[in-house]
Image (cartoon, rainbow, N blue to C red; front, side, top):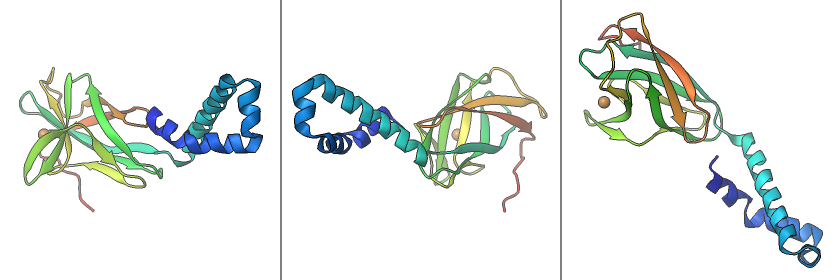
Length: 176
Ligand SMILES: [Cu+2]
């Protein structure tokens, strides 16, 4: 969770419950501002801990890269979220390219986007004809059977490392 969201959650409501339990006068009169600051810091910490109960739980699977033709390559995979909080895929890094973009497909065209949603209890599917990863200016031509490493970066979750096996150019996993 972001710091901003944490402080929004832990903000006035948590502080006021502390104040009402212990009595506002005790807080203010004894050590004044520093006690209040400590109470706020404590409630911020509690806010963060409370959030782990509803966090995204991400797993990546079904990854592959069709053997590239030119100096660009596409990547496909699915990010499954078994948690009850949404997350976003915000960037991708790889040793194959210094410029891995997130592309969205709309009306048969693709465009770069800054992030892609991973819904709570849902999945982000990067597939042919849909959203995908785009590797620009690739540093070498990976062959079938090789693997390309990528690291997925998220808004909330820790990064996930995935190996993309290189498949033939027209490879398309079965749709179920
Ligand atoms: Cu693209």
